Amino acid sequence: MQQEKIEKLIKELLIEIGEDPNRDGLLETPKRVAKFWKEFIDYDAGKIGTTFEAVKADQMVIVKGIKVWSLCEHHLMPFSSEIAIGYITRDKVLGLSKFARIAHKHAHKLQLQEKLVSDIANEVRDLVNTYDVAVYGIGTHLCMVARGIKTDGQMITSVMRGVFREESETRNEFLSLVK
Figure 1: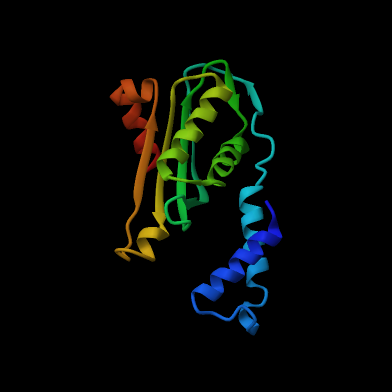
Figure 2: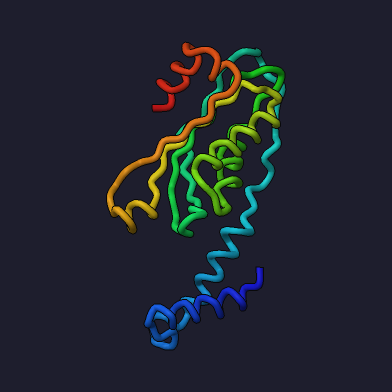
């Protein structure tokens, strides 16, 4: 990413919306906005693939309350989501902090909440080698809250794979534990 080019574009945007980019409050704005984009796009979640041998197979593992911020690809406006991730153990378990690292890794791009939960599910599936994965996300989108209809509302998305899709008892247990 060319930070100077982003700064120039933000300065042009300020002019186009009738602002003076040379006034005191806006002097550093192009630089700050460019810095934000660099931090957002170049985010490094760190090591995500730490797994351990499972103590017992067929346990449900859930981590919930993971809060992430992302950007709506339709409006370039932020949305926050609270994510819950669950899977049924086989031969490997995922290190606890890796759930949050995976969620944050996938949040740092332009996207939809539906894609966010799906990408998280795919990564967990690949790391712990199980198709039995569920991801639940509840989000608040500023593209709805701050523009358009301008009203509060939350979007709920979920991905249910394997036994979470096929067995209502397992799906209901997961959903009751994450809500």
